[in-house]
Length: 197
Image 1: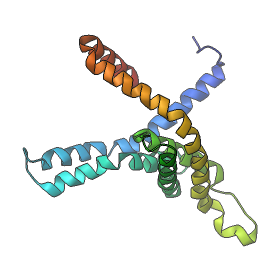
Image 2: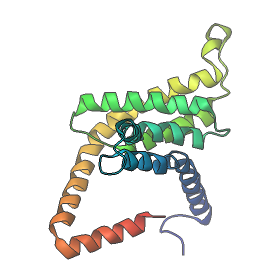
Image 3: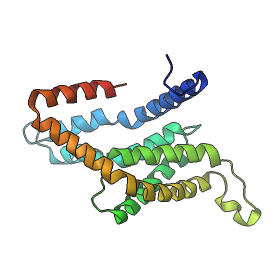
């Protein structure tokens, strides 16, 4: 059966888009095992190698930026580095501008995914754009980071209004699960399994 309100073509298109996003997410996810190993092996109760632990921690501290770059590259038509650069620039623009709306906003890795998706879409749309001779330097792939930054600047204004209630709902849900004993653990486990696909 089809989701309510969607035709067969729209359903396939939606599933195709989700598959592309899933494949794009695999690139940044691939670095997580090595980061986890470095962090754990370097910790004081295992090998006690501080620089190894810090190296693993650095990956986790910058995970959103890594996702912005990886998803941008993964969604671009030809796995272009320009899309990765656009994802990084877009992420910096997005997070910096959204913090001016409310310093309490913390989108975590989702901000990186939003930036990477935007960068990939902007790359696919504009990587061959042509400008008049006097603007030719900014044409093609060079335009992609500019377009991505502009779109994410607009998105930061929207998310600045939309995200605080979402963030509060996530926080309340998490606290409810922690305080609800077995029912909370069951709810968490169920949601965790549902999100695996």
